[in-house]
Length: 293
View 1 (cartoon, rainbow, N blue to C red):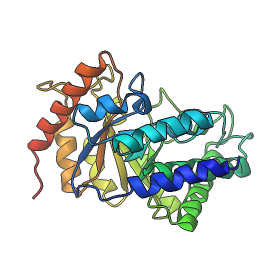
View 2: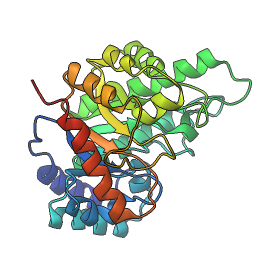
View 3: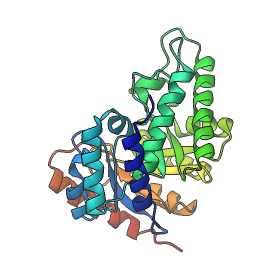
View 4: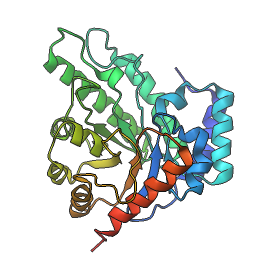
């Protein structure tokens, strides 16, 4: 699973281009989900006023060399920032259960993190339900220990290579996976891993689906690597003026813990142009009600 020599050159060039300074406050982007496809729709996303794109990392790793180079060249030519990446590990790389293979997981992580660094990503969302879901009848505590081991493997790679990357463990609702289903779980896992390279990704959508109090955000203060959201009513792009219970409080809590990083919309797309415009307007309106102190 070694990266081809030509790929290393592309990564080096991209690293120089995309690791410049970021505004010291919330920035807004669009994550790979449904038909949003940031690598494909990056020009439209940036033209709509967003600060960055959040492509799927497993998808980027799986691209043929020529397709990856074309996508990377397009981003470079347009000056488009990749601030974060989601879809860290594909379902073919099993992280829990009897088929988990730490050596294979390490090889995949080596390649994926190198590519993410080359694109300039500083936050990696570790949701990956297909990779981490615990097989039936497999002990939950053993699966948890396997996730701890994988996170430490990733932390070692990031530390060794001096990548300015933090992985955020994402809490996913029970309809998507059967482990790490709450932000409380994600915080507990990150603290057990106990490496600065590993934090949490807070996702407003999953908080609401699991009926978890948005004040749980206050317990994640030093761990937040990234933030995602969607209107839970249909997992869609938010709309200006829409009554989304808990969202204003969610933003207030992010401000209270001093989070000043990226916030991505990860949602279903119905009409890309209309959704992009509405989503950004909605985020800016909510953010304006809790300005920096």
